[in-house]
Image 1 (cartoon, rainbow, N blue to C red):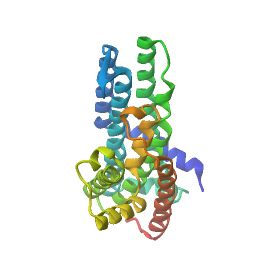
Image 2: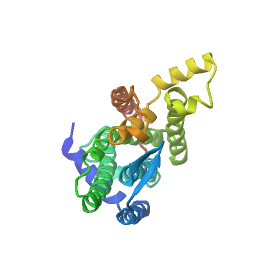
Image 3: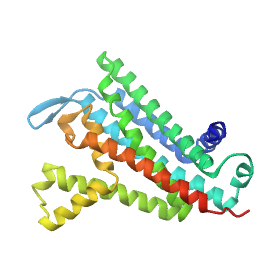
Image 4: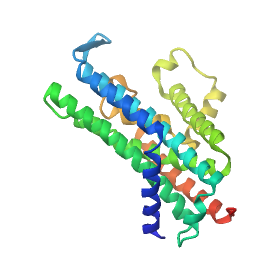
Length: 269
């Protein structure tokens, strides 16, 4: 494996991606909400108990960063891959001593580095704002950082594969649908508030269970990650830790599929 070539492609992808207007838009919106957070203070009533707005702002920023990173994982990945296929700009790099797998692994790493940088930046500035307002560093918030990275890595991998096999629109739609479906299944099976209003029949429940264990558990991973810093307003998922292993397994499966797919695919010049 040509690791040097992989990191060269990753660096080029990183530089190319940060020029996208979508990334600039995300940074501007994030900056606005971070500044807004500095002016918010007080408490809010939840189930008869007062909760600090800090906890709710952490919950808000967690999902805000998640939505931004979802956009980067889907839109930027599919855009970079399909644009290269249309413009045939990959020919120059593939003519060098680097395999197709190494090349697209580098593409994935480049986008993944953007997600790490975006998440770290928002989390760090948010933590500093909490320190300024409250006088302590919110370490619990950082616990959600690492398991969520696995989810973003899988999204990038799946979108990359779908973009190579289909096109930008199809890859984004399938990935978005898969994530939404994962959250819906998780809610129906394990969210007590949902069970009060909707309880599926036994056969449907059994079918959903199969889908839950077979498909990537994005919903469980997200709920588990958020419960690491605020369990009182997030679903405490007893299967959350298993979702970390399941997502990791899916990453290996997708890259195994990519290995065989790229080995058989001929890129036209």
